[in-house]
Image (cartoon, rainbow, N blue to C red; front, side, top):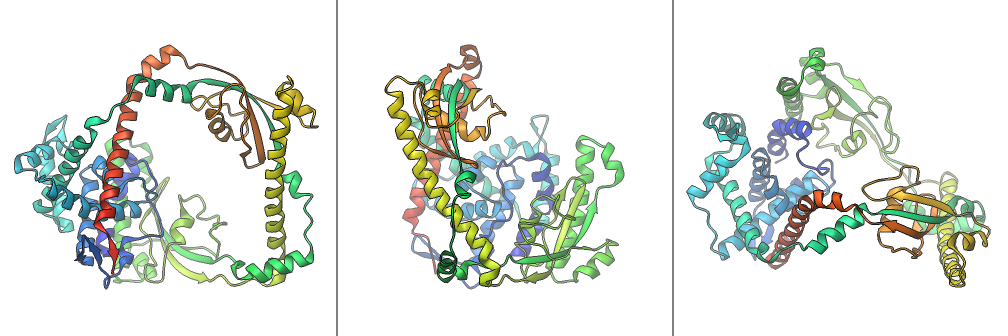
Amino acid sequence: MITLIRKNQKWLLVIVSVFVIIAFAWLYNDTRIDQLGSDKVLSIYDRSVTNTEIQRRARLFDLTISLGLFDYITALAGPIDSREQARENFVMNSFVLEREANDLLLAPNTRQIAEMLRSLPTFQTDGVYDPIKYAQFSEERLTPFGFTQVQLEEVLGNALKVQTIQNMLNGGVAISEAEVRGQFELGNRTINSEAVMLPLAEVVATIEVSEEDVAEYFESRGATLTTDEKRSVQYVTFALPESAAELEGPERIKVLQETANDSAEFAEVLLQGESDFAEAAAKSELEVKETPLFTAAEVDPSISTIPNAAGVVFNLTEELSTSDPVQTTDGFVVFHLKEVEASRPLTLEEARERIVESIRETRAFEQLASRAETLRTELLAEMQTGKSFADSVRSKGLEPQVYEGFSMSNPNMEIPEWPTVARAAMELRPGDLSNPVQTMEGKLLLYITNWQPADDEAFLAQSETMRGQMLNEKQSLLFYQWITDRSEAANIQPL
């Protein structure tokens, strides 16, 4: 199955990386659909499903991407963290979709499917259906991967079923003027505030840790204290030709795709066991480079600039020891797992520094949380007597900070951790004092001095776009809730 999936991803590698169409991280999640195993099946709606069927639907996921049906993918995949999770959700929910569509008597006819095919940008030139593009797609994207018109119509038919169900669910969905205005205000009103920070570092420095503390910690949690696993890899680089630096648009994309295809074919040869890494590299006249052992936290400098190098390398296994091509700024890289130094339990002496640091940090957080709550209570009491926030803070021997002129849409980069501050401020009104806010530095108390409403002209200019976005989000959440509920009714169980 891994071979099938990765074959289908050769062309996808460039399209996704170049156009950045799908705006979520789809790389290197530990959960993989192929780990269901060839000897395992599922029970869905009290019927058994073979792994062969799961593999078939996983391949349809790749076909769906090639067609550009991203709304359909998003509908079935829901909120996801990786491509593999998206694939799994898509496969499981496709069973649910077909059962529910059948119960609702939804069966798109040939004319509807043909109209949808003609409307896809993949098959259009200047907004008009282009039969030549369809023929090219069939030659390049269907036949080489074992697909036929039957699978193409199946994907389009299911996408139409999703659209129909969404239309049924969306009948009562609306976004009011007040909702749009409220959302716009939250993100665009200008906030002026004051704050006081209780630094974590100052508390950590006061924490004393005894030998008894260290011994007790090691006795109870010693099994969790291990060295970091280390790995070394070999890798080859498929660099773009020097002339590519001067190319733009379709010409550059063509060169990029050719390079991607070369790297994917190289990886595929290794995946199929037709050659070892050194032999394959020698046949392709590629230089094999090698790293020393390194940890996931401290990647070897020679590959540290490669996107997600640690994630790629530390997801390789003995069975799947060669990676898919990884795009870099000037080409592609294929990794091969060379050596693994497994983690081992630390001795007490080796773990001592880590134990002391952990105890100090834990106790410091506890003390800091208590101090912040006490300080908040005291500040509120003083402010009720007529004192300002700043004067109340100074009466405690602390110095207030001024955070002015910021919003979620207009960041003030001079404010430390402004996104955290802005999120906390969004929940408050003028005159409110926040609960303790956790930051990288410690605990923060935020007081809203005042705010200026968002600009009316800006709201009028953006309100319709916002309304459409909010409506799409609400509709997407409604469909996802529907299919999640139906998935529970499907009683999906591994056997």
